Length: 474
Image 1 (cartoon, rainbow, N blue to C red):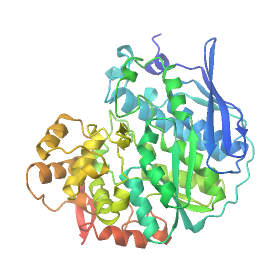
Image 2 (cartoon, helix red, strand yellow):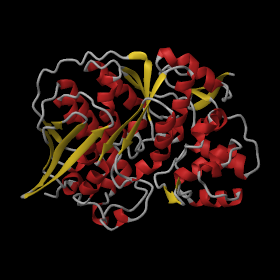
Image 3 (cartoon, rainbow, N blue to C red):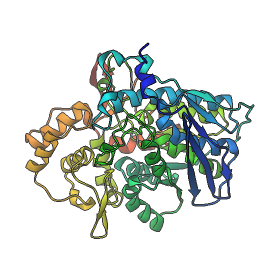
Image 4 (cartoon, helix red, strand yellow):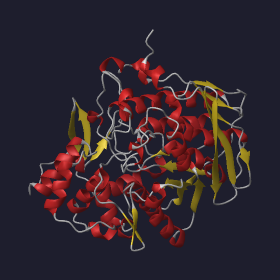
């Protein structure tokens, strides 16, 4: 019998996460992969910028999150530490969602040819049986008590990356009087270069800056070398995305949990800007998140539910989810120029003359330059080379841009066609399904103040009615 596509791509009989070793400000453990008679291990390390208290359960889950990026290719995920039923439910949910994201967005809808040709699916392979994975979770279950962690409504934290969304989120929360922690995660890879400009400035000028150092990026490279469907030459070439990894923010959020408990943090703010649900169409009947599940409202709600279930009085939320990227940039540039100067929205940042600068050519950089120019700003302030609008247009037209279709059309019309576009929802605030007022998914104690600021930079509130964004209030 011919093996299924899923059977053919399996690279590991087992991925095992050891019992964690817990020190005053460090967590470490071994990730062991088994395939036939072969066994290899990697020591994963997390080091905290200050002492934290963490138990075996949370420490083990922190070590597990990076592994989920590769479980689509494993028959089993084996955990050597005890977990509760809420933990098991969450892990199983994550495994299934991420399996489909990898299958659809890294293998089928791939942007780069990282996959060896013999493992590219044919039409008949594209189905839920192959997309949802087969990984069995094996772990000792025990009755786990709640953490009884009470959040202080004056204490919030921003997942800080150097991008426009996290910088704006910090500016908003700081302005409205929240005690705002900035959480930086140094993964020993290119993403840290992106965040370092902000981290250095925040460390010198603001209080409550917290950080975790980890060797997780080295772990990713170790795992990539073991996945048989990857072209090992192709993965060494430049790209503005990982070959397989899509499960990124859960790594940061679980690493943050010891800080959440220690500092009684009630709200964790992640930089989820607006994504048009009309652009989120199915792929061959498979519903998916276009590779950004961990930046979706579904993810925020699921994590908030999980926190409640284990006794952590905190929510995962976003201050920018009602607004599109161009509005985020406009507010950051106009209201918080000091923070704007720190922005590095590029995964291929590098050093030039001692300064960290973006590459300027990837799809992310091109979108940012469009937003800045449309807002009347100067991209050179944040390290972009000075190029003409005509050259920017040429680059945009030759790139596979990753903006929502309406926003891309709006930006092109405004910048390249010298037309002030018609009234558009992309410059407004969006009411998502079930919302009667903007920002209802933000915590009540910050909502009105944040929405009031956002409304000064938007052109009304828009609701999705019969597949069209309709102005509901100006």
